[in-house]
Image 1 (cartoon, rainbow, N blue to C red):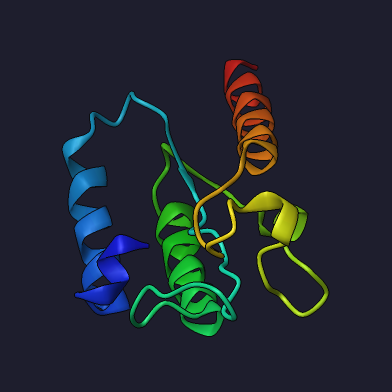
Image 2: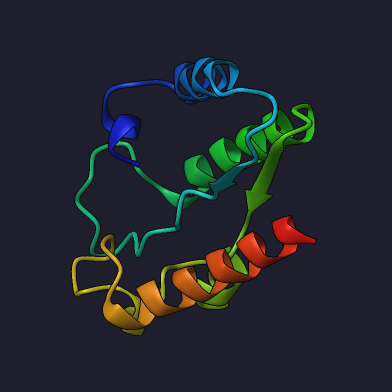
Length: 118
């Protein structure tokens, strides 16, 4: 999300693609979605949920085209009905996860890693 203030979504995805290409094909990669923000509180320039959704769509598409890559999307677990990061899952700034938010993320990562072992 920090890159969003200085790079286009296309540039961000291009950088992710370059990194993926450097990883050996025998190594499994998990890329999680860029988390939504509470737009009423988040002060990160150019970061809004519509743009984040577009970026996530592009990253997910990239992962689908890469055999050793999985996209982990936990957005639905973190957002309100209006698509904002739930207050209990951020530290009060609308951006950084709280311990409850990290717990959801860690549990999803564990599940994804467990599925890799199958």
